[in-house]
Image: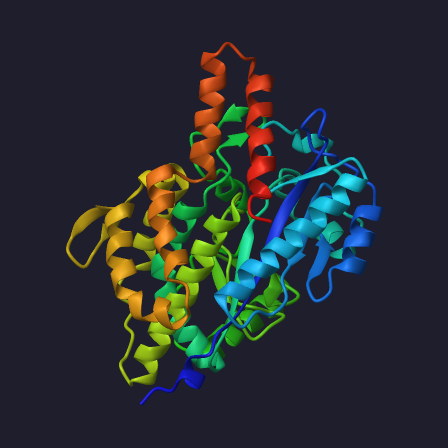
Length: 381
């Protein structure tokens, strides 16, 4: 028999935002350091930290005991960095690429770790003008977390498809709903991990990487989902930053419900098998990266390609019990609204194309995109 205490899940979210000039809408390559200092001082119980580039600001929510607490925390962290940025003539935007900023103009943050990455990875890091959303889930013991992670890998393409917010780069359409992934995948140790047999196997792999001098610790294993180096959690890393908090909460809730479902399966003694080849998950992820909510996924269970809407309908039905237990039914059901109305990437593209039809210049059209993203970033805060 499985008790509620056995299914306890804690959650935390990291979001990487950009700081922009409200007049030019371009990134501020060297923002006033007081923005970071004040945010760090006022952020408790959350955290606000510097990211790879000075134009970025990262928020880490407190450890949350419910999906509802995550929503409160995201509102608090976004509100804090927005209010502070405005004091120093800046705005924040939650999107995974800036539509027209030049990577050549950006300045790395003064941190030894980032400087070593820049030295090792060269052009990849110089072009690393991207941001993501990472969701931590704490539950069970290390081996339980690995077993559940193996199965959640199958849903990584869905999470990416629902979160896309990076259709532009350097002033042009990229043809991808998540162009962030094109940059991220230039690094080693990224992408979909293979199914692991145990936490011991993961630690052995970490040891091999360290033995050959490839990494200093497992924090440099940048898989789409991984055991966290810093916390006893599994970290979902595949997602673009969601512009709207409601969209972010859908992914948080779906992730929590999936974990609870497979914890129940494990606790009941059933073996969760690795039903889908890692190579097929990679292909599905590319479909999400390219097409977002218009993606079709390979479904080996019935030898068909299934659109994201049908995948969602089936999943929402499977997760109903867990969503009710976690009090997040409305959050997971919002996924259907995302598919119907589009992600941030879809809205950005629609705004841009409409502005161009109205004879706006590319710069003017992209400024309209940014103005809308600024508003949506703080929607509900």
